[in-house]
Length: 162
Length: 277
Image 1: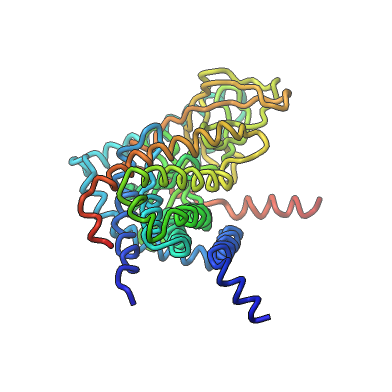
Image 2: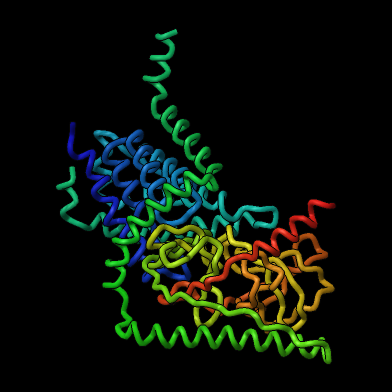
């Protein structure tokens, strides 16, 4: 059994702790970066598509339970986001997408998918302007996630996880 | 057959896993009000909140917490008193000469501290450091000295989660303090709005909005916000009233839980009435 597969479990708790306590302090117009999503993307690229989907589901479910969100909403959105991020995994592509600024692009794409799915369970009704919802609820948080993900690319010790 | 299944599994394993997890998520989405799911949630956030409460204090810049707590409590009590006085003043003017209303409400406040905030544009929640052991129950309002913050959603022994006003799942019956008109207020993901208000109803920018006595959740008037904008709904005959809340969840740290419980007698009376229809 490879120990590295347990790393997402170990990483989860500090990430959630930071998400719930420190991240609100850096919100911009109540838009906050989603550190869990960045972690899901990172592990999906590291370990593959199926692992990414499982990891996204587990992260989302536990986060739903401890944060008071609609149970299943984060689970669903992060499952799909993890699955999509897993497309960028693979022996030849891993280094390219994990250790370069391409990682930020993957975070952006996954973030858009995550936030769009999450929004569908929250704000969509007959009076909603869908384009406006996608802009406010998907695009802005994704841009913020992308900016934060630059830090992940710049952290030099990340290769020790592999 | 087995060969076919193996072929499908080998070639579409990823998609099968995805479909399975999506179905599981959708199933869970339908089980949110299941008591057993609620119980699991209470255990999960109760355990995690005990950790976050320690961590949160490191980033809590208010060093004069105790003194602040007393002052905030006084403020909140004064705010409630003022709100009730305002109510009584308006009612007195309307009822002139009739018998005065009996003031029977005593409003116990439980001071609590926010230990974590789950901010999202649609499902804002806060976790507070008191739970069912202090008598907090789901449905109790959470307020600050400025006004309503949210409603308790679920409780564990020592912690509670509250939905804030900026949560799409929270809908409240509110009223215009000036014109006494009631409406349903909700968060649409971007702003607080009172929905489906006929154009003929008397709403003006600057009107104060408070919770309504006819609300089954908060049957006491607690200030909520002020009318900021009156928009025309897409249907054309109704207005959307945009409300700016008095309290911003982002900046609030110490709040109170108003220990009110729904009146069983009132609920039974209403239930009997509807049963006879």
